[in-house]
Amino acid sequence: MSFYEQFNEIKEEMKTLYLESNIPFVLAVSFGKDSSLMLSLLWEALLSIPKEQRTKTVYVISSDTLVELDAVSAYLKTSLQMVQNKAKELDLPIETVLVRPEMKERYFWNVLAKGNPPVVPKSKRFRWCTSKLKQSPIDRVIREIQRRSPINIDSNHDLYLFLGTRDSESIQRKNSIQKFAIDGSKFGRHSKYDRVCAYYPIKYMHGSAVWGYLYDCETLPWGMPLSTLESFYPEGMYECGLKTDGQQSSCGGGRNGCWTCTFVNEDKMLDEEVKKGNMAAKYLYDYKKLLAAIRNDARYRQATRRNEHKKLNKRVEQRKDAELNLSLFDTFEASLEEEHSLHDYYSFQRGSDLEYTAGSLTFEARKLLLEHLLYTEQITDLTLIEQEEVQAILELWREEGYKYGLIQPRKFEYDGAVVFDQNFKLNEKETQNPQPQFWITREFDCNRDEVIEYVRKREQETGKSFYYNINHWDFGGEEGFVYNTAVFLICQPDINSEAAAGKIIDEWLYPKPKVEEMDWDRFAQKYIARATELLSRPSYNEEDLKQINSVLNTLGYPSVEGKRKAGCLC
Image 1 (cartoon, helix red, strand yellow):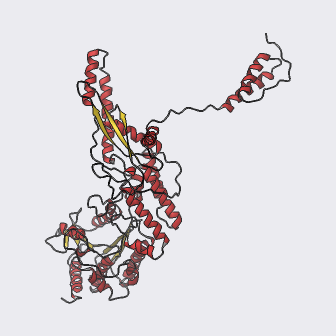
Image 2: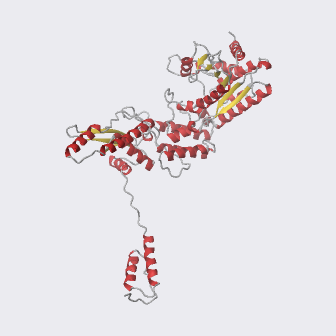
């Protein structure tokens, strides 16, 4: 097969697919090299079809995640507009759509408002950002197109979704395509919608072939110079072959999407910009590294996961209701008291946190990250977060009961992560913090859920958190005595002893009762007013004035002197 034959076959395949039914085409594009090639091939296929037969609309959808680099975002929007303009000029049935995530899908709302941890590199389980930032907004458009399109009773599909994904991109991409492939072809099932057929036209193509075809022309069909696209790939046009050990991803690439993405260990695009002397890129890269580091820092992760805490709240309410019902039948008979005591012992909810588990980012981490983001925005003169998203973040904090005070641009002087493995053993390789770690134990005579609720309340009141785990001491059924213990982690500058660490925890756990300060000035004014009223009388008791002046002198105020003659009121 000649070099160009593979591309001609794809164009013929697209042309046949277009003409054989009225099923609409949807192209999901990022205007990277792969989706640009896919759109170019379809563009050429459409031009080869007579105008009177080009009756079916082709939807070209691109997603603005709101966390793209400014240059990438501008390139994407410009490309989409150029596609629309050029298609209109050539009378091609192309309609462009730019989608954006809704507020609760946005990156910073999820990380800074809810505390969703940034994704772990190469994670297959918790890559929440892709579905929220890209897939969900595109899915809404797909559903709307399906709703407007006629039902095809003669077909298993209502829509063809074109995806510029290739097997040779990475092991993970290849496995993802194969998982939904239909009989090993370029067609596959959609992961969500039964009546959407996924189509991978360049599935078997190598990256060098992609560039080879694109380099045949200096300008993409819609008018975008190829050099603009190439500038987003610092490694150049060729990529290495697919690794064959089944474990590693392919090398090459270089173009990364969101500047906040922590799915990759090294952001080659940002790194290249930093090497060119782009100071704004340096600050963005620093923030991204902060996201990646704080994600694994035990000090900035909740001890309980969000969904577990929701279940906990229900259990606490149920327990309160049960205790209320029990108290209605309570008596003072000793035998019943002893029975209730044993019931309390056996029903006591014991803590037994034997493994390290990390929940959402703590409120403290979220606040520090928001202020550092605003600082980064200020120093780079870039718009990194929209004001409406900042307000939505603060609104959720208020709903969750946190007191946050003044939010302003502030640099976060991060001192390095403290990382533990599943067994609470310090991960010395990933721990970068030089401060000593102290585990401080405190006792609680309440159920595990109530301990967590109390700690949560202190977090809301103070805006500060300490990672902890809960265990218990049990003296046995004969003694009928059991209590829980919470062990708190302290690791911060200037805390070099267990006693100092214990003091930090005690002051945080057990706040001193607020004593209202006496307003002595206001108190004195009452006596001055009393003396003035006394002197306004035709005659007054001199002893009353002496007593008032004695109080005023004690408070440091001068005596109130009268001009009228004192007399005796009988």
